[in-house]
Length: 256
Image (cartoon, rainbow, N blue to C red; front, side):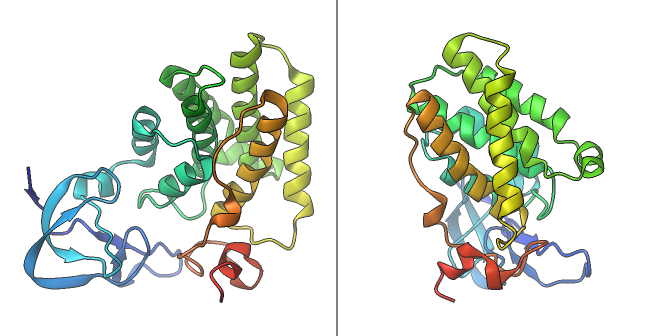
Protein backbone atom coordinates (compact mmCIF):
# COMPACT_ATOMS: atom_id res chain seq x y z
CA UNK A 1 0.00 0.00 0.00
CA UNK A 2 1.37 3.41 -1.00
CA UNK A 3 0.50 6.28 1.34
CA UNK A 4 0.71 10.00 0.60
CA UNK A 5 3.30 12.06 2.47
CA UNK A 6 3.89 15.77 1.98
CA UNK A 7 6.54 16.62 4.60
CA UNK A 8 7.92 13.23 5.52
CA UNK A 9 11.60 13.80 4.94
CA UNK A 10 11.75 17.13 6.69
CA UNK A 11 13.93 17.55 9.77
CA UNK A 12 15.64 20.60 11.18
CA UNK A 13 19.33 20.60 11.97
CA UNK A 14 19.42 20.83 15.74
CA UNK A 15 21.47 23.75 17.00
CA UNK A 16 20.99 25.64 20.27
CA UNK A 17 22.18 28.87 18.64
CA UNK A 18 19.54 29.18 15.96
CA UNK A 19 16.03 27.86 15.36
CA UNK A 20 15.66 29.28 11.85
CA UNK A 21 17.80 26.81 9.94
CA UNK A 22 16.98 25.43 6.50
CA UNK A 23 15.01 22.24 6.20
CA UNK A 24 17.32 19.27 5.90
CA UNK A 25 17.32 15.49 5.73
CA UNK A 26 16.51 13.85 9.06
CA UNK A 27 19.17 11.23 8.36
CA UNK A 28 22.18 13.05 6.88
CA UNK A 29 21.29 16.77 7.14
CA UNK A 30 21.59 17.35 3.39
CA UNK A 31 19.22 20.15 2.24
CA UNK A 32 16.02 18.64 0.90
CA UNK A 33 14.82 18.85 -2.68
CA UNK A 34 11.24 19.76 -3.59
CA UNK A 35 10.14 17.77 -6.63
CA UNK A 36 7.68 18.79 -9.33
CA UNK A 37 5.99 15.39 -9.24
CA UNK A 38 5.39 12.81 -6.53
CA UNK A 39 7.85 9.96 -6.22
CA UNK A 40 7.28 6.58 -4.57
CA UNK A 41 9.78 6.36 -1.69
CA UNK A 42 10.60 3.86 1.06
CA UNK A 43 11.05 5.10 4.63
CA UNK A 44 14.66 4.75 5.80
CA UNK A 45 13.55 3.45 9.21
CA UNK A 46 10.34 1.41 8.85
CA UNK A 47 10.51 0.51 5.14
CA UNK A 48 6.96 1.78 4.54
CA UNK A 49 6.17 2.91 0.98
CA UNK A 50 4.89 6.46 0.46
CA UNK A 51 4.34 9.11 -2.20
CA UNK A 52 6.09 12.41 -1.61
CA UNK A 53 7.28 15.54 -3.39
CA UNK A 54 10.03 16.08 -0.83
CA UNK A 55 13.14 13.96 -0.59
CA UNK A 56 16.84 13.95 0.19
CA UNK A 57 19.25 13.98 -2.80
CA UNK A 58 21.20 11.24 -1.03
CA UNK A 59 18.15 8.99 -1.31
CA UNK A 60 16.92 9.15 2.30
CA UNK A 61 13.25 9.44 3.15
CA UNK A 62 11.59 9.38 6.59
CA UNK A 63 7.83 8.97 6.92
CA UNK A 64 5.89 11.24 9.27
CA UNK A 65 5.18 8.41 11.70
CA UNK A 66 8.87 7.63 12.16
CA UNK A 67 9.88 11.29 12.05
CA UNK A 68 7.63 12.18 14.98
CA UNK A 69 8.07 8.94 16.95
CA UNK A 70 9.76 9.53 20.35
CA UNK A 71 13.24 8.03 20.56
CA UNK A 72 12.12 5.76 23.40
CA UNK A 73 9.38 4.24 21.21
CA UNK A 74 11.78 3.88 18.29
CA UNK A 75 14.33 2.05 20.45
CA UNK A 76 11.62 -0.28 21.75
CA UNK A 77 10.60 -1.00 18.15
CA UNK A 78 14.23 -1.82 17.32
CA UNK A 79 14.33 -4.22 20.28
CA UNK A 80 11.37 -6.09 18.83
CA UNK A 81 12.36 -6.09 15.18
CA UNK A 82 16.14 -5.87 14.66
CA UNK A 83 17.90 -9.06 13.54
CA UNK A 84 21.40 -7.56 13.47
CA UNK A 85 24.34 -9.04 15.38
CA UNK A 86 26.29 -5.83 14.92
CA UNK A 87 25.91 -3.40 17.87
CA UNK A 88 27.60 -0.57 15.97
CA UNK A 89 25.14 -0.95 13.09
CA UNK A 90 22.19 -1.01 15.50
CA UNK A 91 23.41 2.01 17.44
CA UNK A 92 24.13 3.96 14.25
CA UNK A 93 20.56 3.50 13.00
CA UNK A 94 19.19 4.59 16.38
CA UNK A 95 21.46 7.65 16.51
CA UNK A 96 20.24 8.78 13.08
CA UNK A 97 16.67 9.02 14.32
CA UNK A 98 15.44 12.65 14.14
CA UNK A 99 13.93 12.61 17.64
CA UNK A 100 17.31 11.91 19.29
CA UNK A 101 18.94 15.13 20.45
CA UNK A 102 22.57 15.62 19.43
CA UNK A 103 23.80 15.90 23.00
CA UNK A 104 21.70 13.91 25.48
CA UNK A 105 21.70 11.13 28.05
CA UNK A 106 19.38 9.23 25.71
CA UNK A 107 22.54 8.02 23.96
CA UNK A 108 22.98 5.76 27.01
CA UNK A 109 19.68 4.10 26.11
CA UNK A 110 21.01 3.56 22.60
CA UNK A 111 24.24 2.04 23.90
CA UNK A 112 22.65 -0.50 26.28
CA UNK A 113 19.97 -1.70 23.88
CA UNK A 114 22.36 -1.93 20.92
CA UNK A 115 24.67 -4.21 22.91
CA UNK A 116 21.85 -6.41 24.20
CA UNK A 117 20.02 -6.67 20.87
CA UNK A 118 23.21 -7.83 19.15
CA UNK A 119 23.95 -10.39 21.89
CA UNK A 120 20.37 -11.69 21.77
CA UNK A 121 20.58 -12.14 18.01
CA UNK A 122 24.00 -13.83 18.26
CA UNK A 123 22.34 -16.50 20.42
CA UNK A 124 25.05 -17.71 22.82
CA UNK A 125 23.43 -15.92 25.76
CA UNK A 126 19.67 -16.35 25.90
CA UNK A 127 17.99 -12.95 26.10
CA UNK A 128 14.35 -12.07 25.49
CA UNK A 129 12.78 -8.84 24.36
CA UNK A 130 11.48 -8.48 27.91
CA UNK A 131 15.02 -8.75 29.33
CA UNK A 132 16.25 -5.96 27.04
CA UNK A 133 13.28 -3.70 27.75
CA UNK A 134 13.88 -4.23 31.47
CA UNK A 135 17.51 -3.17 31.02
CA UNK A 136 16.31 -0.15 29.04
CA UNK A 137 14.09 0.81 31.98
CA UNK A 138 17.06 0.53 34.34
CA UNK A 139 19.34 2.68 32.23
CA UNK A 140 16.63 5.32 31.87
CA UNK A 141 16.58 5.63 35.64
CA UNK A 142 20.35 5.65 36.08
CA UNK A 143 21.34 7.77 33.08
CA UNK A 144 19.36 10.67 34.43
CA UNK A 145 20.79 14.07 33.40
CA UNK A 146 20.50 15.49 36.92
CA UNK A 147 22.30 12.51 38.43
CA UNK A 148 25.14 12.12 35.94
CA UNK A 149 25.82 15.84 35.49
CA UNK A 150 26.05 16.51 39.22
CA UNK A 151 28.42 13.54 39.48
CA UNK A 152 30.56 14.93 36.66
CA UNK A 153 30.45 11.79 34.52
CA UNK A 154 29.09 10.69 31.18
CA UNK A 155 25.77 8.80 31.08
CA UNK A 156 27.50 6.01 29.17
CA UNK A 157 29.04 4.86 32.48
CA UNK A 158 25.83 3.49 34.06
CA UNK A 159 24.82 2.21 30.61
CA UNK A 160 27.93 0.01 30.53
CA UNK A 161 27.08 -1.31 33.99
CA UNK A 162 23.47 -2.11 33.08
CA UNK A 163 24.46 -3.88 29.85
CA UNK A 164 27.19 -6.02 31.43
CA UNK A 165 25.17 -6.76 34.58
CA UNK A 166 22.29 -8.00 32.42
CA UNK A 167 24.56 -10.29 30.40
CA UNK A 168 26.28 -11.69 33.47
CA UNK A 169 22.95 -12.51 35.11
CA UNK A 170 21.62 -14.25 32.01
CA UNK A 171 24.84 -16.15 31.34
CA UNK A 172 25.49 -17.38 34.89
CA UNK A 173 22.15 -17.06 36.65
CA UNK A 174 23.57 -14.76 39.31
CA UNK A 175 22.27 -11.44 40.52
CA UNK A 176 25.26 -10.28 42.54
CA UNK A 177 28.57 -9.88 40.73
CA UNK A 178 29.52 -6.37 41.79
CA UNK A 179 33.26 -7.06 41.61
CA UNK A 180 33.20 -8.08 37.93
CA UNK A 181 30.72 -5.44 36.77
CA UNK A 182 32.58 -2.72 38.65
CA UNK A 183 35.85 -3.75 36.97
CA UNK A 184 34.18 -3.47 33.56
CA UNK A 185 32.68 -0.07 34.44
CA UNK A 186 36.05 1.07 35.81
CA UNK A 187 37.73 0.08 32.55
CA UNK A 188 35.13 2.03 30.58
CA UNK A 189 35.66 5.09 32.80
CA UNK A 190 39.42 4.81 32.38
CA UNK A 191 39.07 4.55 28.61
CA UNK A 192 36.77 7.59 28.46
CA UNK A 193 38.94 9.65 30.79
CA UNK A 194 42.25 8.84 29.10
CA UNK A 195 41.15 9.51 25.53
CA UNK A 196 41.14 13.28 25.85
CA UNK A 197 42.31 13.65 22.25
CA UNK A 198 39.11 12.14 20.87
CA UNK A 199 36.02 14.03 19.84
CA UNK A 200 33.63 14.17 22.81
CA UNK A 201 30.30 14.24 20.99
CA UNK A 202 27.79 11.66 22.25
CA UNK A 203 27.88 9.69 19.01
CA UNK A 204 31.65 9.28 19.20
CA UNK A 205 31.48 8.23 22.86
CA UNK A 206 28.86 5.57 22.06
CA UNK A 207 30.88 4.15 19.16
CA UNK A 208 34.24 4.00 20.94
CA UNK A 209 32.70 2.49 24.08
CA UNK A 210 30.87 -0.11 21.98
CA UNK A 211 34.21 -1.34 20.67
CA UNK A 212 35.52 -1.61 24.24
CA UNK A 213 32.57 -3.53 25.66
CA UNK A 214 32.39 -5.77 22.60
CA UNK A 215 35.95 -6.91 23.31
CA UNK A 216 35.13 -7.44 27.01
CA UNK A 217 32.02 -9.47 26.12
CA UNK A 218 34.11 -11.60 23.77
CA UNK A 219 36.68 -12.26 26.49
CA UNK A 220 34.21 -12.98 29.30
CA UNK A 221 31.38 -14.81 27.50
CA UNK A 222 32.99 -16.04 24.25
CA UNK A 223 30.39 -14.07 22.30
CA UNK A 224 31.77 -12.78 19.00
CA UNK A 225 29.65 -9.88 17.76
CA UNK A 226 29.85 -8.48 14.26
CA UNK A 227 31.13 -5.09 13.19
CA UNK A 228 33.48 -2.46 14.53
CA UNK A 229 33.35 1.28 15.07
CA UNK A 230 36.53 1.47 13.00
CA UNK A 231 34.31 0.98 9.92
CA UNK A 232 32.14 4.02 10.68
CA UNK A 233 32.33 7.20 8.60
CA UNK A 234 30.33 10.07 10.11
CA UNK A 235 28.31 12.13 7.64
CA UNK A 236 27.14 14.57 10.34
CA UNK A 237 30.53 16.11 11.13
CA UNK A 238 30.21 19.65 12.43
CA UNK A 239 26.51 19.29 13.24
CA UNK A 240 26.49 17.65 16.66
CA UNK A 241 27.21 19.28 20.00
CA UNK A 242 30.85 18.99 21.12
CA UNK A 243 31.82 17.97 17.59
CA UNK A 244 35.52 18.53 16.89
CA UNK A 245 36.27 17.47 13.30
CA UNK A 246 40.02 18.03 13.65
CA UNK A 247 40.32 15.20 16.20
CA UNK A 248 37.33 13.02 15.25
CA UNK A 249 38.50 9.59 14.12
CA UNK A 250 35.29 9.06 12.17
CA UNK A 251 35.84 12.26 10.21
CA UNK A 252 39.42 11.26 9.44
CA UNK A 253 38.15 7.96 8.04
CA UNK A 254 36.08 9.96 5.56
CA UNK A 255 39.36 11.17 4.06
CA UNK A 256 38.94 14.82 5.01
